[in-house]
Amino acid sequence: MSGPARAPRRVLAPALLSALLLVATGCRAAAPGPVYLTPFGAPTRPFSPAVRVGSLIFLSGQIGTDASANGAVVPGGIEAETRQTMENIKTVLTAIGSSMDKVVKCTVMMADMAEWDRMNAVYRTYFTPGRLPARSALGANGLALNARVEIECIATAD
Image (cartoon, rainbow, N blue to C red; front, top):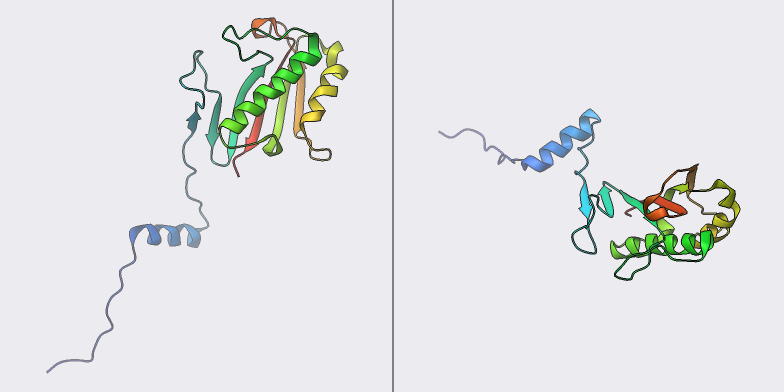
């Protein structure tokens, strides 16, 4: 004698079960670890040009070096150095699939804070008016290669 027919059992896939548990308990899945981005090949110095962590991209500080083999700081003072620094930032962002429009925070280090206004005149041209990134600035003694300015940025990956 057979009993009443039973509905077939459904087995939830482990990934779906984990997701349901996270939602039910209000927890979030751990963010993926850092991704070290080297769009121009292996770095020649002990740092990565950019590191992506979740939806943020952290750019190493850039100075106004040219693209020539010797990588010297461009001549012409703070305006020329700031322009080249911003172009270098733009180049890194483009190479990793981002853009200046996704920059949300900058830190500016300057050898001489008396050059602040002249640096700002160039810096602001790289961003859409009304969409300027948050920013910190400080005077520094001894930037790499005797640069006048160094700028590091954080951008979004989305």
